[in-house]
Every structure is written in C-alpha cells, then in structure tokens.
Image 1 (spheres, one colour):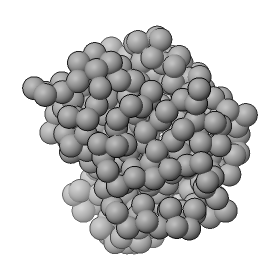
Image 2 (cartoon, rainbow, N blue to C red):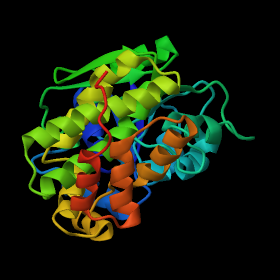
Image 3 (cartoon, helix red, strand yellow):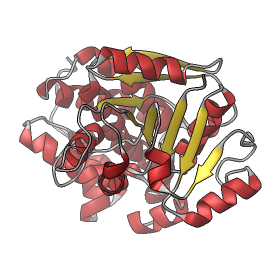
Length: 336
C-alpha cells in the first residue's frame, strides 16, 4: 500500500519534495496557506521558481488544512521557519495521536530560542493537541532546484526516536536521494539555522570582490563557530563535520541557488539588507536567524566573530568593508 504523506507548504522545497515522493510511489497531498499558489500548481503542474520541473499527475493538492493533516503516515512541515508555530497552531486539532512529523524548515525561533522541532513540540503539546507525536528533522545540503531535477542528493533524518528517523529514512530514500540517520537532532537543526548566517557572510565577501581564499576561510572558521556553540549546547561534535553541518554550509555558501549567498552578495555590492531581500524575492532565512544566533552566543558565552560581524552589517549599519577589516585585524589566535 502506498505511503500517505501530507506536506504543509508549497514553496520550492515543499514542492520539490512532494514531486520526488509522489514519483517514488507515495500518495502525496500538498497544502499551501495561499489558495492562488495551489490553483497555479494544480493548473500548470509547474512551479515558477523551479524551472524544468514537471509535477506528476499523481500528486494531489488541497487548500484544506484539515484534509492535509488527516490520515497521513507522515506529515511534513515545509513552511518558512517564521510560520512554523502559527501553522502548527492551526493544524493542531487535525493531527492524530502518535503522528510522525518531519520538519524541513531551518531556523531558530527568536523569542524562545527553540529549534523548529522544539517549536512543534511546544505548540502541538498545548491543551487540545495530539499526544505522542514523533518528531524528525530532515536537513542537509539539499537545494530544491537540484532535487526537483533528480540530481543526486544526500540528507540526514535526525531524531532521538530511532524508529521514527528510520521510517522517514525509508520514505525519503530514492534513486536520487540518499538518507542517513543521526540521533543528534539539536546539532542537525542548529547547523541548519546557523549556516544561513555564515552563508550571508560569504555572500557579502563575494559581493565585495574577495576571492576563493576568503570564501574558504569564512566557511572553515564559520563551521568552527557553529561547532563551538553546538558543543556548549550539548550536541555531538561529529554532527558538525557531517552532511547537516559542513555539508550544508558548503552548498549554501557557494551555490548560485542560495538565497542567503545571493542576498549577501547584493549587500556586499552596496544594497541595504532590505533592498537585498526584496531583490532576492524569497525568504532569506539567515536574516531571520541572526537575532537568535546572537542571543545563543551570549547565553552560552561562545565567541562567534563571523556571526557578530554579519549582524553588525545587517542590523547595525556597519559597512561591509569596515566589517571585514575588523575581522582581519582581531587579536591573533591559535587555530585549535
């Protein structure tokens, strides 16, 4: 019997995953909070931001959140991180006891410093919520533009609930998608949120006209910052050397598909952060993650100079060139 999968969120990532899962034989129902988005997908069988992708006839669409959540073997949250809580609140009455829930959004909630699965646990655990939900974070170096075209991709299914992680591993594995499991859900989610901030920094460097040496330095020192923070938060240090850590950072900091990289480049070229976001035209998660990144570094007393510098440029009006000079002239240190 085909596995039933509901996907909440019809952005590029939700739609690319829906296509892959449907093509792989699952019974997939895709929901969006924007009715026009569903009408367009159902009518054209294409996505405006995923050129070359055609959606299979077996993929179904709905504007009804209750229908999207009901009777699913797996329920996927693929809305932007800032909408995870509000979507969970609306979905809560319709989610069954013991539901396997996969989060593919990457971010840290500004107000609570919760990861996305912690947001889901908190919001779905309220009075009328389902009990016994099984949360999995699915994260890795996975640009939707490539998954949409069946280009080889790897990803991590992370959960302390080994069986749930393996259910998701099996469901999402295809000829083009190889899925690994990892019990360190916090390390995987922290990596997914923080790498967007570092990728913004790499983009700014590129926009200023700096080369491969600077890019490699920012990626390497960036993962060192993320790993330092993760270690202080009790995560497994090996996670940061894996697909969800350095793997995702490399792809986000170097790819033409990366919104964070693109936004950073525009800022480096002289646009304001607001102008850069408008020009990119989609959610730039690194901007959303900055307040939480700064607060976490302060709470755990972890030095994160690249994160601090990106924040100074985005939120405090420091010029990119001035910021790079400040980074390069910091006190001399040992690498390890």
